[in-house]
Image (cartoon, rainbow, N blue to C red; front, side):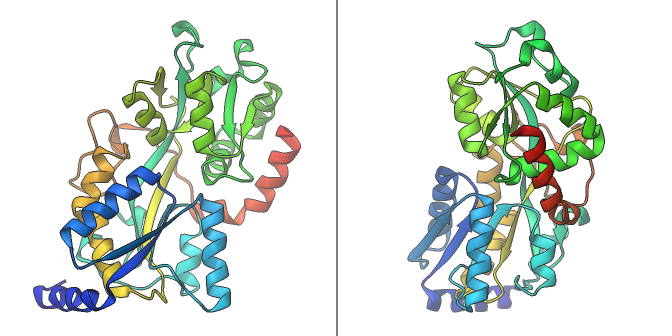
Length: 319
């Protein structure tokens, strides 16, 4: 934005007096982001938060659009629905000056950008699993030592994390791998938050877990070792965009800039333990750059299209 346009946006935001964030990120991280945003823009007197897992958040947003009563302003979550929402006109076009710093594969220019990303790791409880057998490859999960509830995975029917991991890994390693993994009888957990808690407690010894949760737990002293699978790594971008009928669009634009290139991005990098996809911005020292990993490429739109097929197959194999 030009300085004049930015001044106009700020003037309009002052009249709005607040905004609402719909986020799938951790509560503590959202709280810190909103506090830093209010500090930068003290006139934002009221910043409301709706924090929910991806499927619940997506259903809420769809319900608001069906009812013709949109309450949220900025959506900040991982998931595969973004291309569909842009096509359906549910995301506001906003030509933020920050978009130019994001690679083409991690944005829909003028609509959404992946301001954060997690990767799927093999996270191990070091008190339960000996060093010699800690998995470094997905094939290691098929060892006899990991039978009968030692492994934890997120439910692909209820978790964005689980669905993206299952769909992409199945594409690269084949359905046969998933059949063999199911024969190990892993513990199937509803979502990533519950999964990391069970890994920390030692209820499961190994979890297919997002990097941000695993690294954050390790920072707090949990007995966790994090490995990125040698065969390849599933990347789960977390996007931000403005709802097309947002009641506070000016404040939403300021928050988008804050997330995409301002103080908000710094918080995501340092406190959130995320990979950062913006060019020229480094993640925290304990988070590898995406370029250092063997990322498995996969069309996110296709993941969304395969949802029913994956739900059916997952039920057949893992329940």
